Structures are given as C-alpha cells and as structure tokens.
Length: 120
Length: 159
Length: 198
Image 1 (spheres, rainbow over the protein chains, first blue to last red):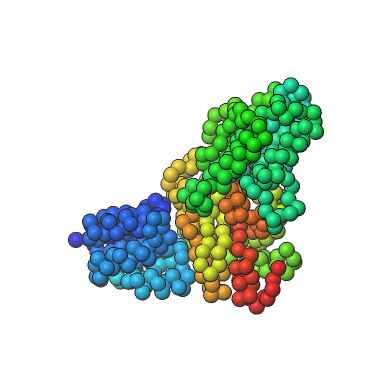
Image 2: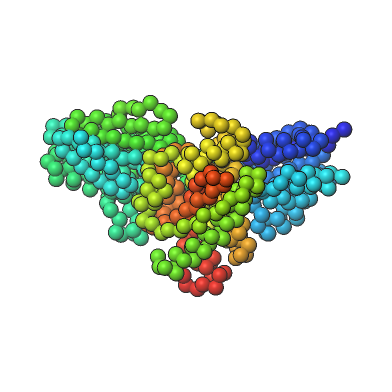
C-alpha cells in the first residue's frame, strides 16, 4: 500500500509540481493545503504518513503549523520545502520537529530521496 | 491635437484645446479641474496624501495637500473662475490587495484626502472611476471637458 | 546618495542576482542562463518606470515585505512577453492571457528569485531577511511601479537593479528592486566592513 502524503504550499503551481513528482514515485497525495491552518485541519482528518510543508504562507506560517501538528502527533513526519533557506529558519524548523529541510528550487530526486529516507 | 503627458507628481494645464493624459495610475489619483465656460483644464497625478518634511524640494503635485491648491491656482492663472470649477477623479487602486501594508490602503487614503480637499474648496466632483485592483489611464479633452478612463481588459469609460 | 553607496549596492546586486538567476535556471530544468551583467542605477523615482521600458508597457510584478534583522521591500518585474515565456517554460502552457495557474507559477518564481537574493545576502552578513507572502500584479508598468513605491514609502531616489538573462537565444528580462530601510542598509554595509555609508 502506497504511503500517503499531505502537501502544504500557498501556490497552486508548487502543489501541482510536487504532486506530479510524488505520485510518479509511488506515493499517494491525499490532500493539499494552501496555508498552515488548512494543513493542521487536513492532518487531523487524513492522518497522512508524510507531510511536505512550505514556510511562507498566509493566515498561518509553516513553522507554527509544524509545532501544532507535532503536538497532535509527536510521530508526524514533516519535510519542509521552502525557498527560505536562511540558517535561523532551518534551525527553527528542525527544532520544531521537521525531519528534513529542502530549499527551493530543488530537483525532483531530492524530494523523493527525502521522502524515502524519512518515510522508511 | 496636442497631447501632453502628466507624470507622477506633475501638474499640467491647457486652454480651449489639447488633451491632458496620465498613464499608469495605480495607487495614485489623477485629478482634473475644468471650467467649461472658458475651457480651462488642469490635470494632476498625485502620489501620496500628505507632504513630507524630508521631501522639501518636491513638486507641489506630488502630494494631495499641496497639489490641490496648486492645481486651483493654475486654473485661476489661466482665467478660470473658482466657482465654476468641477473635478473628476481616477485611480486610487490597490494593486497588491493580499499584502495589506496599511490598515487603509494608500489608494483609499489618496481618494479620501483628495475628496476632502476638493470639498473644502467648494469644488464638486462630477465624475470618478476609483478604487479596485487595476491600473488606469486617464485622458482629458480640454475642448469639451470629456474625461475617458481605460484599464487593461476593460471597456473604456467616460466619467 | 554617493558613489561609494552606489558601488556597494551594485556589489550586492551582483551577489544577489547571481543567486537568483541560478535559482531561475534550476526552476527551468537547468536551462543554462547567461547572466548579462546586472546594472544597478540610482534614479529619481519619476524616471525609474521609463528606465524599465515605459509607463504603458504591461508588466508582471511581484512585491514582498522584508522583515527580520533587515526590514524593507523587494520587487521583481518582468515585461509581459518574458512572463508568457516563463509561464510556457514552467507549465508547458502557451496562452495569450495568463490564467490562474500561470499567475501561480509566476508568483512562485518571483518568490524563489527574491528569496534566493535575500538568502545570499543573509549568508554573507548573518542578518535575517525574511520575505512575506508575495503580492502579484499584471498591469501597466507605471501603475505597478507607483504602487510599489507608495507601498514602500519611497519618496526620493530609488535604486533599480536591472538584469537581463538569456537562455538558448531567448531573452528573459527581469528587474529586481531591493529597497532596504535606510538604517538597515547601513547594517548590511557594516557587515561588509563599510562604516558610515551614505
């Protein structure tokens, strides 16, 4: 059975791009969130195996969403996918509980590599 | 027919004939004043509502509080009568609505400032196409006072 | 603004846009981009829109607010032709009108370029520079430009960094505008060993 993934990013283009890469590599995308609040709500509802999380989003940013999801499920497997690659941000995301941090733009291989490593 | 382009912060005028045009009104306000009897027209392209202390050398037309009085003076200089002046407005849009940089957008602030000043001077606003999220071009025909406003993807309107 | 300040801004321009174009290249599946020397100019703001190709030219503009150790604003503008080409390269779609997906692609591209620029400066200065969710407008250059200036509360001169990149014979034109707060700009300069700049 394929592992399930929830994608959180504020641009439809990035959600579509990630979906294509992820599904092509044997995973099932079960939900898409456009902001941190939606990410939390969908996590509760869908309980995906993995999450890709953007940081800069309207309504609620990714770091806040990560903290809340980790509170709901300390076993949550969240991979950050963000253009914002400055060190304090990376540290904050990993401290909040993210398992990996991919800086955009990244290759498709890099995403898949991370999913396999974290999802294992 | 001579067409004069009025850039951000400028004020231009014409009498009897000519076209005064301003392109690319975003959050700025394009203002026209017209005296139909003597066919005197003035156009301004105002950037912000209030003048700044750190911008002393600015042309009067850059800010509403210095621009409106300067426009009135220019109209009078060409022989207009203040009691016959009528105004039209275009612009004051918010092109980046999802950014919420201010509680009230600069475009809205400009609309409010210009409207208040014109009211204070007793000049009626007889036409306007303001607000929204798109840029505008304003053309003012001084021979008959007609003002047309165009925007990308929209039908031209006469205000 | 003095020559030293302008020279320093040009230096930042080279660093920042260098990284931004590498990011652009990666987004367009590794199309190699030749970065035509970025040109930084300090212009009275009334001339800046003309400098970028005329007030009535339709452009796509991305606008972000920067927060953190350095506060200010950044914008990235492309003429419509370039934008259509970028949409085609990013989504495979070729249309006159840029639709929702196209807008989304342009927003993401702008976001990545601006953030790459700031990431580069941040790494060199150890100063946090966080861009907000971007705003996107497709409209006359004059309208987009003055909305950016009004939003950024710029009243005097503005520095425009103009970059032209070309890939496989296709000209892609981009204008990156970096508008740091005066005091925070001096913070950046100090990190480069330049005291009391401007």
